[in-house]
Image: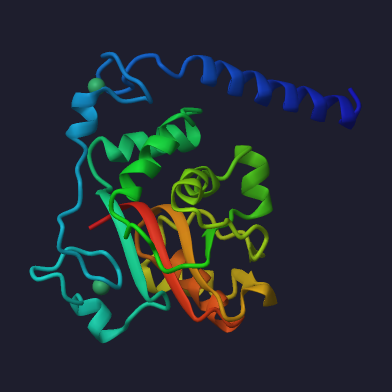
Length: 239
Ligand SMILES: [Zn+2]
Ligand SMILES: [Zn+2]
């Protein structure tokens, strides 16, 4: 088979599964099998593990009074503020991988909506930037979950998405087994931002913040290119 034919077949397969997914949208709750509109029934949606109201404004870890956490007082991240909706635990730990790797893309707009509720009504950012995947990962997965989360946010908030302004020039997947310090080291120089970002206030969107190392590296690259304010917007946060 020629490369062209293979590419076409892959595209066709991708399109076919996208259509199948779309048609299957108002199907059953992925968690309990009950009637669901966008992947989850009302009961399971209600029971999602939401983060408490008082979070560290810088990194979105829970703090008793909503003040800065110890980590941010000692060594603040390169981003200026964070917003997160859910705790990455229990069912959220199943839903996000299902959306990313299990072909359940229809869950991503629903997850984005939980984040929308945690954002200021009029966020003071000029651009929304989905955290980019390396080209190798994008090819492998076929889509970037951060883009699918950013799209409904951009639409609801009337903030444009900045395409190709933040680029991932190093493949740094498989960070899970690294220590926190090793993660930061592994990500040094992984991102680069274009000059178009100079003077802008931006929000970087991703599905999960674990150590925050990726978002920190992205924020560093954005600031280096002249961004004046960088926020991290994530659906879920590990505690
Ligand atoms: Zn359910
Ligand atoms: Zn903090």
